[in-house]
Length: 148
Image (cartoon, rainbow, N blue to C red; front, top):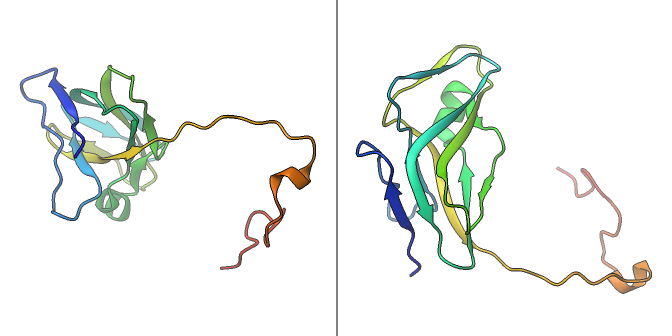
């Protein structure tokens, strides 16, 4: 099992944790001195008070919490937000309020999930024509081409 190293920047920061044995993501909580209110259509950068070191060859993905999305229309704006393995700054979550009411975040509120996954680096090879890309059944068919 890989290890995520975590530095609490503030004593009140909440460590990331899996909420069930089968959870894919660890919940991240807001670390705030005062509540933040996001107006409808507004966005906010929410600090977690944490800095991390991901295992070599891994990335972190910041993903929305489904409960916030369904109940309040609040989600991660750049979902999934990517955390590179060499980033050492504070984890912050960029939230947007798609709901019709202001949404207030208080210290300790769970605001996102952190999913850690492996990363594969690839070599880039330039080819001379499309035959070198390899034919597929789908071909060039794009948006919506596979049906509902």
